[in-house]
Length: 147
Image (cartoon, rainbow, N blue to C red; front, side, top):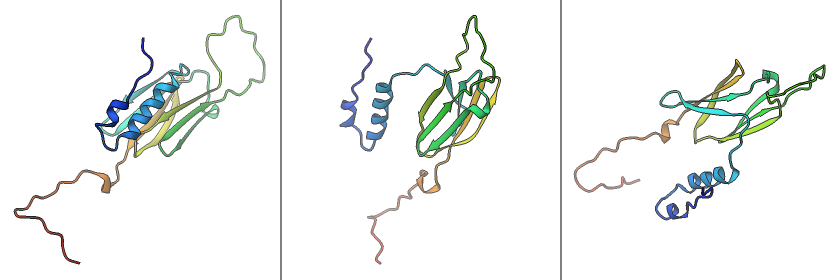
């Protein structure tokens, strides 16, 4: 199975999408992290949700930080007051750090922890000046206004 992708043929056919292909290159080269598992859901036209399985972690042991287009979720288990002797330990409680690259104008609007699932709510808020606008077509040759 091939694990590397060459996006260079797409660079010559696109304008302004270099960042997208760079992000794809980065995602493929980092490989997939397996812990903790997560889902990314589309909740609406401009709303998204990341759901992470963080069984065994409390709110105090989890941290969510957004800096520009990167979302960082970390979990650091605090040592228990009493050490337990396990016969079998199948629930992972190891520290983790998970990074997500967010699209432009996506912001974290909330987070919650219930039943071992950390839910992070995201919303894309495009500024008015960046939204599509219709251009009126007039007859004749368009002229620049004199200043």
